[in-house]
Image (cartoon, rainbow over all chains, first blue to last red; front, side, top):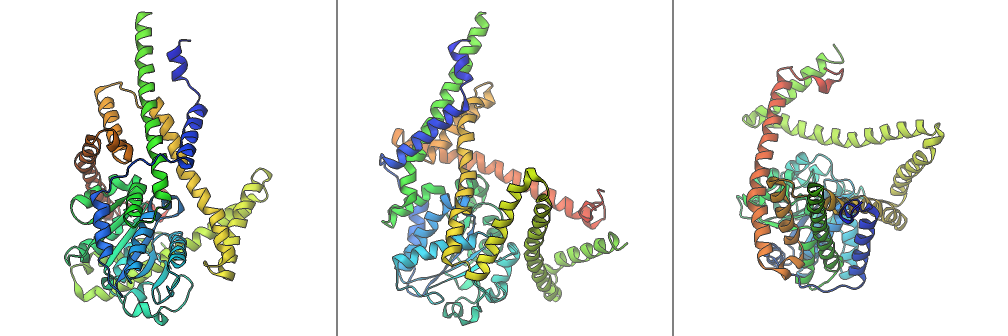
Length: 282
Length: 204
């Protein structure tokens, strides 16, 4: 068996180990590769930095903990910016586990801003079934769409924040954390196209990188006005809000793993052509 | 009759009236009612899912080879429900339970893709033909467009990567979306005409 043949039959475990080693290496000893701030992150920063005292941001946590790796840092950076400016945040979720991701984010925000009061400055409405139907209903009455209960089953009418958020139209900006369906594909027709875009309101989507291809037509048509793509956007938002977190530290690991994939692509092709040459000679 | 004809009539009446409600404001109250029913039935679907899952795994408890997996699932399912009812989703133990089970499990399952992609890049992405070569080159640009090292190597990488995402990818996605929408419309018409009845069960 020639060298090239041996190489092409390399055990998968060697590749897995190489990937694991370089990712751990990059996480423990980050190289600090410069992260260029893209236009989307800048637009998101401007959108959320324009929040004034009392303005409400509605966040839809339409993802689970698998998508959180890509999305949570972007969402948290946007929430941080809004709360810093005295704004308020209300969250919902079209995915059952999204409600828990919201709890996670609010807990973090409360640690950073201990003065925040639940029901006054923020509220987690929890998982709401129905997808498009929920959004359509919430455009007329949020309390009705939520069956008048929050994530803990409490009566929504008792919370002061809900008096200023009668419908989704009362939110200054809606941001959808998107890791599949239901998600951006439901928000685009029911909220962005029906209301936000005709009223010159932004519609922000923070999505996992795998959704970039699916959402691309909505971005080009202007139905999604600001698009935060994957952990990269999270890292950019963390830099803009001057609060480095998991997204920034994960970028070096992602860069190195991409380099490994590239090197393996070259090796795979070289071994393929060399084997072809050898077989032609024989 | 009760199993097929009545459900068929209900689906036709509801489907057609829902479509007509877009054009006839007189029946918007009916549409609002249907929206509520849809939300309630979606919530019930979660309950049915839990019941169905329980039935399968309680049956599995009698099979020694599946005992361990089904026991784990039942404990996880009902443990979460009981903890949620006692503590609410903000309880310390509930959060620890969630953070130590679902978070690492889901992250681990998703992260496996990285390992599969890496081995696939080595074994499958070969320049066997012109089309395969074009795909490989496009993959390299899009891959490095998403990470800082791409721009660090050459400023043109993010520009080309963005062009590939914005133009050829968007065009292809739009075609797929329109194709799927046409397919969904055709299925809806078949349901209304009674040609498509597989959703009623019975294998037709």
